[in-house]
Amino acid sequence: MRNRLINFLATAVSSAALLVVPGTFLTTFAPVAAAECMSPQEGDIHDLSGFWFRDEGDCGFSPQEDVPDLTPAGVEALLNNVPTRPRHPLHLERVGGDADGADPTLSNDPALTCNPKGLTQMVVDTAHDHHEVIQLDNRIIELWQEERLPREIWLDGRPLPTGNNLLNLGYSWYGMSVGHWEGDTLVVESVGMDPRSWVDIYGHPRSEAARLIERYTKTDGGRTLEGRFTLIDPAYYTEPWESDLKTWTLEPDNALATNNFGWFGVYPALVDLLCAPANGDGTGSNPFGGD
Image 1 (cartoon, rainbow, N blue to C red):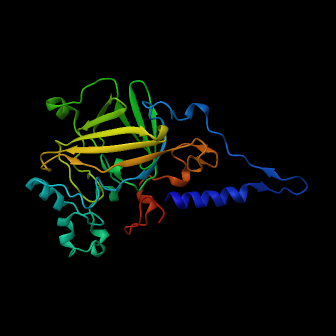
Image 2 (image 1 turned 180 degrees about the horizontal axis):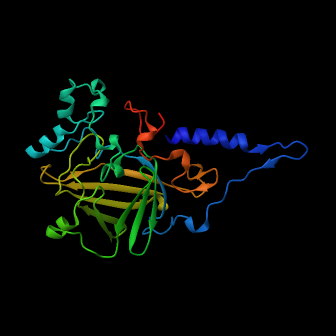
Image 3 (image 1 turned 60 degrees about the horizontal axis):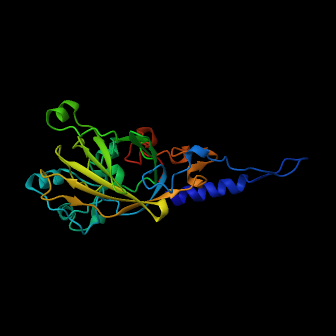
């Protein structure tokens, strides 16, 4: 997606760079400069503000060879989920061990019918490229390119809801998240995630009791964000499930991808990854639009 976008924009910009008006002179178009206040804080290790481009890490919670051990309830929940492309051995058994033999139209991934991806699928997936972090004194707001989604991570010291308090609040697609600093690492803990959403695109399930821990650290002089995640769900998994390393690269303010024809931001029109039935043709085509 990133390459298609950049190639398209590069062509458009180069075509419009010089405009010949009869009887006048060549006019050069300059990109609109990004606002000073949006400059990322590279030097501040505790400020994650900026536009981040997903760089490395598996598009699942962990690589294919890292198969988590499931409880009997977890096996049952896994087999109820039908991913577009199987990866777990139990899913592969259904297609004779050949992932290419799976029929993607049989998938019941909730996201394919324009339901939210939820935590953790939104964070680990690579179908989108960018998200923006806006860091305030009492919370972090993540703006995800896909779904045009805002997510709150509270830094005001509030505890996560538990017991009856959690039941009264109810479950939601993205749960409730709080964060605190341990040295140079931001530790985010989330509960209350709707079990209807999948852990990743490969159909790994999550129960109502699941707890997600995210750890983020800026490296490379503040230009790289490293993330590692732990899913604790004793109802479905026999032990905590650790992710691989996911990394994001900080986009400069004048990056082409975040300055679409002078429109600075994470939601430029050409990469609107909002799932809408109107974008498909009713025959299982891509509801996000495009190829």
